[in-house]
Length: 198
Image 1 (cartoon, rainbow, N blue to C red):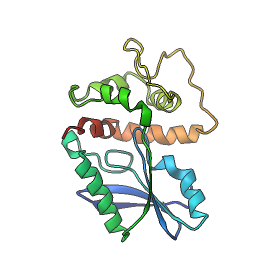
Image 2: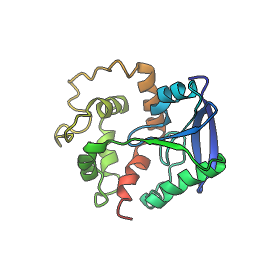
Image 3: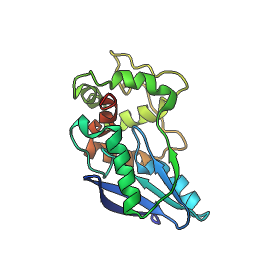
Image 4: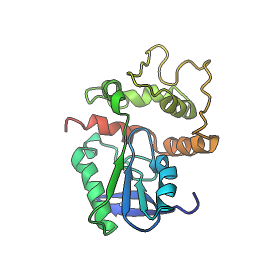
């Protein structure tokens, strides 16, 4: 990972953290909730070794990129503007684009994070759980069907149920996510869903 370069670029009114490695045709990696540029580290190293320029920002509201407090600052126009501004700042006309989000699970979290919920309500639910356990729960609970979060148990599941790390997520990886989400919180990421109707 030490080969990956990091910079901060002012785009579309915010400071955006960008990780980058390699030369050649550019591949732009965009993450979803609850991820960071770090999600793409293995793909970045692999593609850069094959002659590509791999670029992965922390999206607006995540990691080391600015997180405006208002949900009105997370519309599709803001997000697209961030990416257009990033490409302009990097002098790129075209990129291969790779992105992800939770896909089929979207229905449940749109309900949980929907615009008509009170601001801070989801964050309050998250705060009842240790950040490390919450991150583990997010990463380990992905199934093809909707995620069920019983209100009486909440996010993170029962504190008595162990959440063991899979082979693809090390303690070091978990600590990176925990550090970033402890510093920034989850409001920026949640604001994407709150801004859907704007």
